[in-house]
Amino acid sequence: MTDARMTAWVRGRVQGVGFRWWVRSHALELGLTGAATNLDDGRVEVVAEGPRERCAELLSRLRSGESPGHVDAVVERWGKPRGGYPGFAER
Image (tube, rainbow, N blue to C red):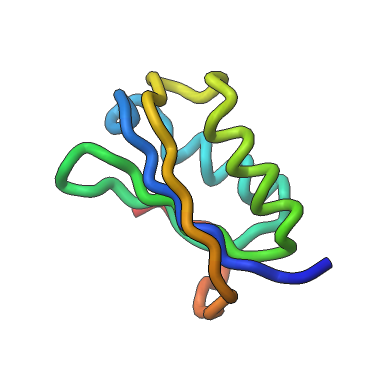
């Protein structure tokens, strides 16, 4: 499996509802490193690194409608992993 870096910006009612905790839980289950960060504009930025297939699975889960709150849209960007994440953080 090829490693990748997936960055997703999640829009909707995703702050103050346990969304970042939910993302962290699923990312750790998938063996990914990275972070879920609240942005000033109300979105959550999710950066995940690890096997591309597992990053794609996390992206699928972000879009599943099963997360806390309500997701209106998810926009993603793919790239090469940069490292620097010792685990998966909520910021």
